[in-house]
Image (cartoon, rainbow, N blue to C red; front, side, top):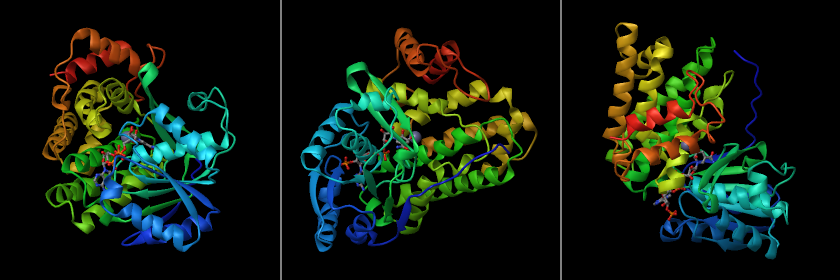
Amino acid sequence: MQNFTFCVPTEIVFGKDTELSCGREVKKHGGTKVLIVYGGGSARRSGLLERIEKSLEEEGISYTEFGGVKPNPRLAFAEKGVQKGIRENVDFILGVGGGSAIDTAKAIAHGVANPGIPLWDIWTKKVPLKRTTRVGAVLTIPAAGSETSDSAVLTNEAIGKKSGLGTEWNRPAFAIMNPELTFTLPKYQIGCGIADIMMHTLERYFIPNQNNRMTDEIAEGLLRTVIDSGRTAIQNPSDYDAMSELMWCGSLSHNNLTGLGRAKDFSVHKLGHALSARFDCAHGATLTAVWGAWARYVWEQDPGRFAHYARQVWGIDGEEKEAAVQGIEKTTEYFESIGMPISLDGLGIGVQDEETLKELAMEATMNDTIRLSVIRPLDAGDVLEIFRKANG
Ligand code: NZQ
Ligand code: ZN
């Protein structure tokens, strides 16, 4: 096991009606004037925003709102939120929704605490982040894990780039997680969420074995739970128990617990971000569209690891190489069964020409300056081959 530090300071408030304690939570964490950041309207339509507003009013906390965050949230929109936050003198940012609203809330928090510094300079670490504004999250979709994660992702439309900022300053002060808030989710978004949760653990799992049993057991248990609960949730989106499991797994999968004591590999995410930046596709779907091609490209480098995954997560017996391949097939079959694409064409963007695939490969590898994957280091040529395999 490698050395590690693990600190997740976010207070979790989990269960039915917990959004009613929003005002108390903001007060406890020192907020006196709140900017409520939300998406395209689902939180308004469900009555959630009204309940949050009432709970803030009951605690005598004033608020203003900034709605309209789109999936794959944009830098320029977050900058508008920063201006509003500064103008309105807010001291607390509340993200209501999924990864897009919460990540935008995090970005606005950084901008409000650092007036005059362009957000992209903070994002690219040109200016080191030394302070931020407190953020709280009310989660409505189990997926990105932003409610407890140390990262936030924005798309800079001007340069066609989607990238994440990883920093401890990104951890929210609290996360309110009521599984009932997810009952209005379309099935496609539930599928995208299941995929993203699985991927946050898979990306930490396919690292050459580090004799790291406890972390493996947590990861495998989480994956089995998500696979089972995901099946139920897709059948019945208002199954409280299944949604509870997904919601809790979503946070645990991306707060680093499932990768402690070993390296982290977010190569499939890099491929997915290149696709989202170019085609504005849902994040979880971009990951399943390429995962199978990635796995089939790298598994022979470490068949033992892939076989271990197949045995522990899918209950597959048999000889090592055979089990490894079967584990990959089971995973892609599962993605299909929950309505997720397993190719670029399935993503709804059509089959891509060679030139586009090359550009995607260059984008994912920062013009061939970085190597992806720990299990088998991949340069732009390897990534191009993976995109070709995923293209059909
Ligand atoms: O905008 P509204 O109207 O709220 O609709 C949203 C949106 O259309 C809808 N939705 C959310 N909750 C709902 C609901 N519709 C009905 N009922 C509800 N209860 O779902 C759609 C997707 O929302 P979004 O916030 O985009 O989903 P998700 O949580 O999957 O977030 C995706 C974003 O997070 C980033 C992704 O790259 C992507 O930009 N990620 C953030 C991470 C992090 N901060 O740690 C890590 C992840 O790997 C990921 O990269
Ligand atoms: Zn993700």
